[in-house]
Length: 286
Image 1: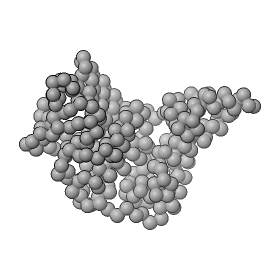
Image 2: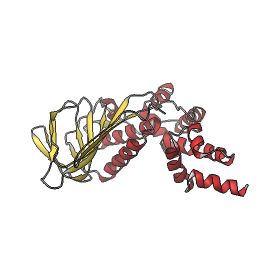
Image 3: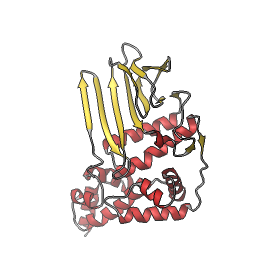
């Protein structure tokens, strides 16, 4: 899992803090950069990015100069800046500062579920509490543990929703014929390649689908994204090894989790207890 835990840069100067984290969209896939920032005084110089800049304000107020006007963010708002657009950013007032989570997404990521290529966002400031919460939660969890399959399952799905709800692009049809068979094929491949699962983009290409179509079909058939299915499958395999007496630190790598903390997070989600508690309980019973 060394590709998943990639470059991380942290800077701090008094109250100014920023952390840069790089995830991978699938095993060996393209990078996805994640920024977590909390500033009181910092002001960005005018600049532009080749990618979309997608940020969720999580505290305070930021003022962004963009397209000849000013954007004023508040907690829970989403900002989308199109590639190549010059912008700045700074505190909205002298006391509160501003905090946000941002990701930098290649144009292709937002165009998977819509026609016309890279979508255009006429309005950069979006009020969509449900999507803002989902983006912030995914950002936080991927910044903590940038699992490639999780990143590829969650980020393109959320960015497609962003484009379909708020851009000028026209959505593609949702229905994918043969969803059950597609999901079964994907499940089999993920189970067979437990410790190094293939990228969803590669699986989709093998099936003659786009990645968004694969994700849509999998969710339609199972109700959950591929990474969540695989995590639960790994927990099931981990139970067998824990019952055999192996320690959680050993089990984590054998079933494909990044580390013991990653195993523990999912074990508690699925079974409600930690791997250590489970192991001790079954060992006592034996």
